[in-house]
Image 1 (tube, rainbow over the protein chains, first blue to last red):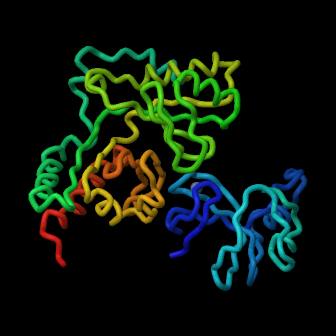
Image 2: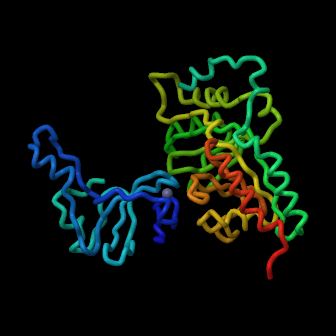
Image 3: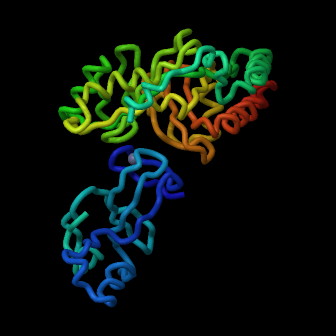
Length: 104
Length: 227
Ligand SMILES: [Zn+2]
């Protein structure tokens, strides 16, 4: 059982949370101008990082708020949790290599 | 929305027909409570349902104009952070999330004779202004959403610890604090109202299950402690 620290509620059991995939995937600025391939890339293409990964979590059984977390996909260790834009992430993380900016 | 609900007239005698979500468990609660008391005072725990508490769902960003309006109408400030509660104006306000709160009305014989939820919600909501020029915020009558169970006695925390993973020890959970969490996978609010007193608020549809879960969890304390 992972102990996940909600930015609002503090440490809670993993079962109180749901996973929301990669963080900082920005909505296209002009969605109507995207072709099918670009739209598919926005919807479905995600990093498959081995190591530190910026991802979305929601505290479903608690405050019901979304937040971001930096988690090591190898060890499952949560390095940090944060809300809003990406923090100054260590080099080599998904958020640092992602092509889309630091939107929530 | 709240105004529309408030305008509905409750037919005479309707309050007599009200049935709380765990009314069918009243006798079983008494028996389970008596059994733990008979086994010794050390781990005794009493359970009962506190039905029909007025509950108002509040949405407002703390510090905003809407929050100030709700606080003034309610007569209590909004709690400022996780597990916080505040009291005033006949309500205790529980912190649910950074911009979400639940105002729970005091226990009162009045609750049995009239459904005051819609009127209270309309009253507090009117502080946010008229439709079309409303200050951001929300007040909704949630009185029928959850029922309230109360566990009292030295064994109360032991019973809850079987299903709640949050640290309920006094060093981590003080009197007057309330949290949103799960009781054996069921979403509930857990509210500590005294050193040996906890309230558990499950949704009405879970009331029977949670009530029976509590009776089952109490059974151990109806027998002498195994050394
Ligand atoms: Zn939370």
